[in-house]
Length: 230
Image 1 (cartoon, rainbow, N blue to C red):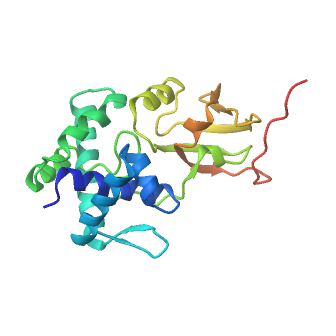
Image 2 (image 1 turned 90 degrees about the vertical axis):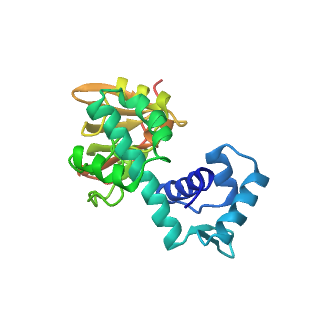
Image 3 (image 1 turned 120 degrees about the vertical axis):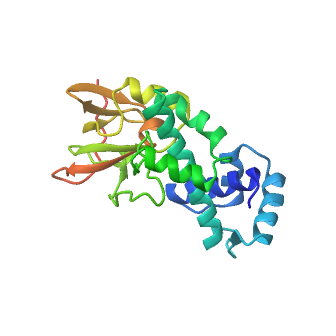
């Protein structure tokens, strides 16, 4: 059975892969907040255990057993988040950190009972799919890449740190929110949107972590930056 440290690495590799781009040691070190030598040593252990392989171009890829172990951990984490928010009434912005304490100690029997009590949810409170629970196969794009003139529905908040969750919740950006994309301020400025009839400026760093499903495409299908005033 993987140790807690190994599980953290597998989870990080799995999530980084979903975000797109190649997973390499430097990206993994940044995501986990550890040094390069620490990552190198752990990757050696993961390869020896048959959980990852390193491609000739240095990309880190989960093996079938590595992916399975990562999905078990993520499923237990996201079920724990549902327990904390749906049953215990904890704010969604705090659920992620608390669930991190549960995910490593939940047994298969407890996991099965959790899923049953929660009526087999397909996503966590932040909208991220729960592996193996019948998640939807929607085509999602980042709010930061959504063309001006589009209407979309927010499906999930990709990053789950408390500061980001408090920020987007304050803007009314929770899963299910309908968003009209009005424009993009220049020089990496905010995304201008309408959320529930209210004009909302969404910081670019946050918009990059908001995944939406476009429900009404823009006529031109292109992203357009707002002109500067003056």
